[in-house]
Amino acid sequence: MDIRERVIENLEHESMRKTAKRFGVSDYFVYRLKQRYREAGTLAPKPHGGGHGPLVDEAGGEFLRAVLAEASDLTLNELCERYEGRFACKVSKSSMDRALRRLNVTRKKDPLRPQTEGGTCSTATGCLHRGAPHAEGGADHQCG
Image (cartoon, rainbow, N blue to C red; front, side, top):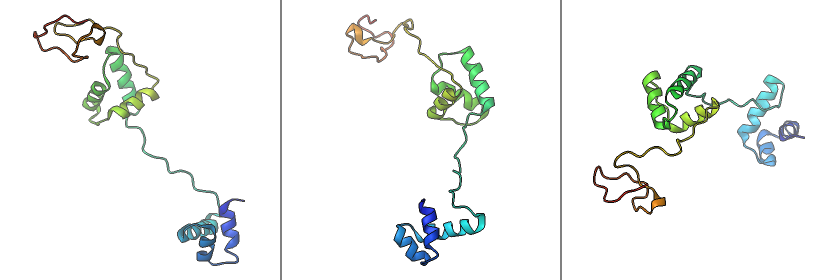
């Protein structure tokens, strides 16, 4: 037997305060339960109220698909900026990531991008920069 049923059954013999104390619940819980049973005729809990809906709706999803079709290597920050520019709605990286997952959009980094002059160091070559960009034109060794 559910605690709700036991509380209502016990109310026939004891006051609300004594019932609440007996079952280790608040007085207000007993009061609301009694009121719900009287008004709705049920002891079932109310359905969950839900939560916030997603910031990126269907139109936003179509926009993201179109943007990623043109430039698939955009970062989450860049996607957020473009989305804000189009819809005037600021979206966090986390929200953008959830939106892309909802849309079943997978994104992979480009394996080895060609290095630019003054490019990024590689730890595999023993460079001490450890992935930091070289100063422009000031690199005293060859990386990668």
